[in-house]
Amino acid sequence: MIQRTLLRSLQTTTRQPQPFRLTRAALNTSSTASRSVTPLASQSLAGRRWYSQETEAKKEETAAEQADAQGQGDKATSATPKADDPVQKDLEAKKKEIVDLTDRVKRSVAEYRNLQEQTKREIQAARDFALQRFAKDLLDSVDNLDRALANVPTEKLTDENKDLVNLHSGLKMTEDILMGTLKKHGMERFDPAETGDKFDPNKMEATFQAPQPGKEEGAVFYTQQKGFTLNGRVLRAAKVGVVKNS
Image (cartoon, rainbow, N blue to C red):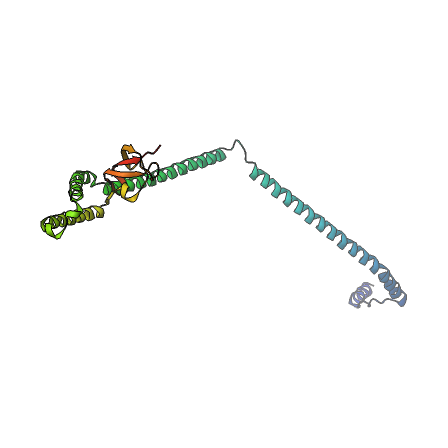
């Protein structure tokens, strides 16, 4: 009995398992079930995709709105700095100091340039009028030569008076050379009566007035002493007689 039971147990263990077989009915039912399930699954997947896209779009919109709000907030904060910020106060103080220093530098440069121009003018004036005192000392000599030449009558300058003619020619040459030398240094002589100028108080001194028929009122008709200028400045005013008909 024991041997038979052992053999039966061995036979059951050594038997190969039978393959699982499905009947046609089972296959048909499974196929219909799968067909009925697929559209529902596709619908659920499409819904999930649409929901995910909508949520992503909402997230992007909110992110953009937050970025705009943050940018506007940064601009507002940058445009309206804090009044109690010590760094900002220090920066404003430095800016004011820079403006003040720049203004001082500009003024110093302008003053220095004005000083340079003034110094140049003074140096040029000193050069132009360095001979003023010396030229005044020569005026008497020039006047004496002029008087000597004016006092010789022209009718006596003939061949009969050769000595007088030679003396007059020598004095005239001396005067011309002297006046040419003075003119090189800016000194010139003027005679208002020769040019027919009207009386100018800046350049002339009226010693007397007299009526002169046919001449304009205020015109110079006689020169008692000729005038001199040095580089355009009056060195000595001319002494003249002025017409006064009224």
